[in-house]
Image (cartoon, rainbow, N blue to C red; front, side, top):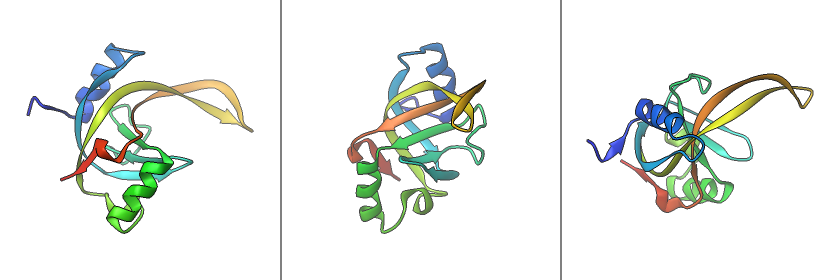
Length: 122
């Protein structure tokens, strides 16, 4: 549907509109997830894949979803299709050695989620 933007399209549009990114509703199947201080839901198995769209859940949203889903979102949502409203932005990720940037980097495309209402599980 034209109403939804798929991950590949999101990555291209976000890059073209960098740094402000592209706002819309993004549809994807969660292939993988991870957790730092935030929880990430990824459209590709390898989050470093250039085609990957990462949904970045704030700690508050992750906690709220965990209650609603009965488990960690990055686990429970694997294989599930989700709709996320927000802005996809190209983010530079620096490779670090002992906490310092090495000068090597790559780009990811993130949609930040600060309110649980931005995410819908189909």
